[in-house]
Length: 207
Length: 273
Image (cartoon, rainbow over all chains, first blue to last red; front, side, top):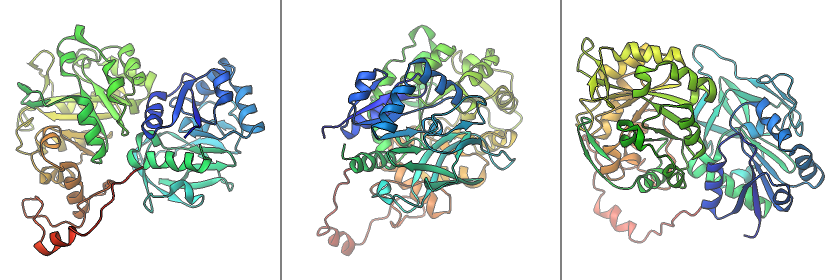
């Protein structure tokens, strides 16, 4: 394995656990916001825990917006958004009205409808229904468990959704559009399934 | 650490190794409490967390002596996912809402230690001071929920380390008084104790320390039994006991000689991710 993975450190989220998971699997990775390293990387990871508006404001603050647009949209570099990192791939979020997302995949982020039977945030293990892109899920069971922790979800009704989870209603859990992938759950906290998903993802890229 | 009634403590080993093992045995979440820090705040030191989370690929809750927003921020940076608060909040309940506003309700677990054995005499125990308070755990759990706690972690001090099973009365009482998830702790000695919590109380999760540290394969065996009894639980390990026979005491039964003989010729590959 000679590929390098850059975990983008933009001041939100638990970059440490993502780095631990990649190191455990043997990938060379750097947690960074240095434009030079991001340009040299073979794949990017956009982690994220926190609020949509804050995440976008931080990307701007660290001058990463233009850089990422160039790397991902023009150069076609693969990027994996995790949790909030998936949500900011879309256009906007109910969580932070007035803040624009990256707009790479056409969806808006909406809140999970609350009800007496349904606790929000959606925290804990839940199963996926895989509809497409099966190679991302090689070696996993039919309805694999992953660890979720979110109050909002990507309302992505077009063909980019490849797996869904059920929490009150079916909601997208994995979206893929060309070189851009987003996962709503936390693979770095989903034990073997999460590690396998990382392995499948990077194997598929040839990193 | 093995703990008995919050009075006797016997070191078991390094936390990093326990975490790595529990993780590979398919545990769902890990709670790590620094019992030195909770008694003596000057000895708080959290940077070791960074080291021990290297092989923790499940959500990790860390607690012990948490008394400021900076403590929480440091721990989250070192790889914790949730924070367990306890004694400090007994005197400063407003700290729960302060922390929940910054880090979100899902991040704040309020741990409650309780003494007593019947609904009328359950009282909250302050482990840092070694004192019983004149507050019922139900009232305190309701207050913690109102202040923004995301989960309640209820421990029976009397059952802690006793292997006599959970205090189902206490757990159910607390679980029915709040809407947020309640985690049961204190007293697990065998797999059926865990089953009892799921079947006979309203708690959302079960936690155990000594039982998981000392009984071989207890995580996988317990989860297999829970599944066979219809509890919806994740079982996702390379090896499981789903098709194994269990005795009435919930211990694994020896397989027949013929089955064991056949195993000699079966090649079982180690799973490599």
